[in-house]
Image (cartoon, rainbow, N blue to C red):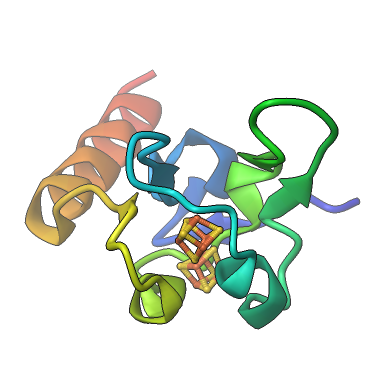
Amino acid sequence: MAETTFMGVPRDQIPWFPTIDYDKCTFCMECDTFCPHHVFERREGDRPLAIANPANCVVFCRACAKTCGPDALSFPGKPETIARIKQIREGASSK
Ligand code: SF4
Ligand code: SF4
């Protein structure tokens, strides 16, 4: 698959994706059913849902969090992520 970029930075270097709080998650699968980007993956075992493809998450999307009744999904801060993207971009251009 071709490498995707966001704001001039390879997508897989941008730390934007949901984190599941397993103390709150009830494994209702609403988030996975909602998201069309295959970020989540259903698995066997004690934790039947995982973030399998973080780089598939749309940068600055938080839509699945609204589907989560127990508020088990969290994201990084947007300003911090923008700062990080700029830092990566400046690092890359100074090489
Ligand atoms: S934030 Fe958006 S793209 Fe990312 S996992 Fe949730 S619904 Fe999918
Ligand atoms: S919507 Fe929330 S509670 Fe349901 S599976 Fe996703 S993270 Fe877990």
